[in-house]
Image 1 (tube, rainbow, N blue to C red):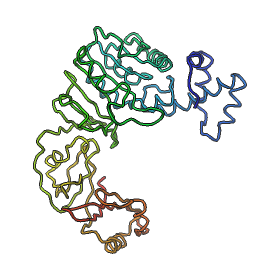
Image 2: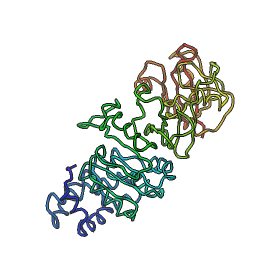
Image 3: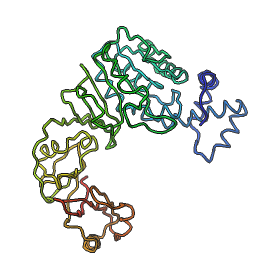
Image 4: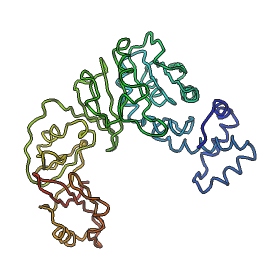
Length: 394
């Protein structure tokens, strides 16, 4: 996709461009139709304008789930990739709802700005890239939120934040297309962001969920947020934005929370029982697996492995659950015998603490003509290689 310029943004906001985008919303936008679509567009627009229209039509399709009324807004490819999902942005904005005036620093094209304004806040949205700032302003206006939002194109680190009661910072986590994982490699680096606390005590910083605890200040609370089983972000908070726990797992939709209080509770280690639980990634990353075990009345299979097992079938949004069919010390010949007897239509292989390529291992396993799918877990149990055949609860 071509990089946008301010001139292109102005064109895309024109009535003729908006009419063309509305028509494209009903077209088949797959790659194999690119030539035909561009040929048709070039009857009315220049080649650059036609390419920009087609890019926006495709970005609008991808933006569904990240933005409200996605077909009314404008995007850049990279900014759309980095934007918070709609569910996460809406959940996080509720934390800011008690504050009348908040700042969205590094607002990009406006995903979090929109959510904050919808939560009732008056928002100062700051973005140093002129194109992204122009898109954020256009997107806010398209949703009827302009009265609550002031978009400023500037480097927020040099901007006075007078009257701001709380701030959200989304630092750049990519450079030259590559992800940045260390907090001091972010733009701006974390220590520069934390200097904000001298002026705005209520502060939240969006970080990669894999951020290392050793890189974080001890007085910050870390919330790991997942959506539909996928880790989305780590939210570092200070002041009145902090939750009650210093480490918190949050699973969306919900939200469902699990606090990782310290010290972690003692949990028994035992062989598999009737049910196997795989904790949500947010629970694992927040260090709350043992806390979940207590809630489920379950045991660890191994002190180093994030699988739990118990006799009770407990429904929880914090973990997936399987009914254990058979289990034992790992032996490939025995596993194949079990599967032949079960006659599965399909087999899924999952592993944790077991040196194997799941896809390559799956090809070694027999499948039959049955309709049921079974999951093979390759893991460790009390230090030994272990195999579990299970069926997922519905």
